[in-house]
Image (cartoon, rainbow, N blue to C red; front, side):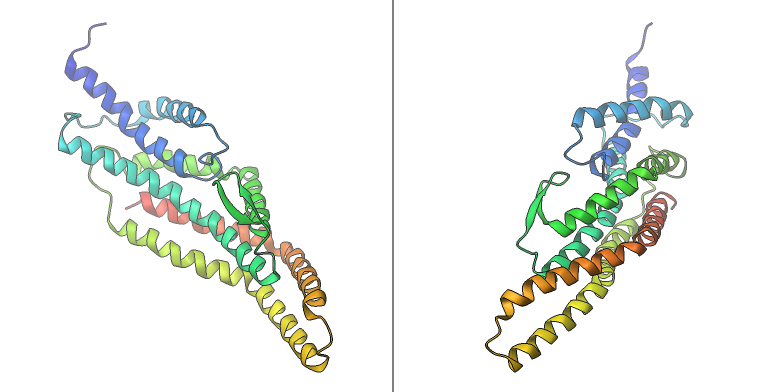
Amino acid sequence: MDLTESQLAALIQQYFLPFVRIGVMLMVMPVIGSRIVNPRIRLVLSAAIVVIVVPFLPALPTVNLLSLSAFGFILQEILVGFSMGFTFQIIFQMFVLCGQYMAMKMGLGFASMNDPTNGVQTTVISQFFLMIVTLMFVAVDGHLVLISLLVESFQTLPPGKFNFQPSVFWQLAGLGSWMFSSALVLALPVLTSLLFVNMAFGVMSRAAPQLNIFAVGFPFTLMCGLILIWLGLSNFIDIFNNTMIFGFSVAKGITVQ
């Protein structure tokens, strides 16, 4: 089979631009993009998705791969894939931040452990919430739904056209404030309850100065915090469901412009 230089360049471009979008999202998204997944697996998975998706895409405009226009197309694909994957990273980090709020109030701020997915130190409560969210996300096939949204984005936001709106960056920046506010609202029942417990121990320390508040108050506060977290898990499925619906709506809004 004889291929001219222009035909070879068009063939590379037809597969390369979708590969960039898919590969970047798989590098950034939760679960698949974590450190515990070998980069070779993400590379093979990206190539497999590209081989399946490209035959259903319209023909991309042929441009010189070393031109400024081609660089702009590649940059846009990187931004689209990064935006979709980073959206769910913020969703997951909201639960991690909620666990840190609770752990600091309970006195478990010093009890840190290594997070294998991100390679950083987090509190044990944060790691507990992250483990639950990750298992539930995989159990409901959330990673497959996110990949399907990425595949659908090739129809609403086709490669080879400059149609990525700058308003998406403001939307991603707004997710930062959403992360802090939602984590605080989720942890507020535990924080408020432990505040009243600490106030009660403050009154006891004034009434009985000889009482060792640290020896008595720390285990009692820790026990109350764990009981409150256990009681709050009864509503965790609804919280997870609403959060995932919000995350998928934001990810879909990035591609539908």
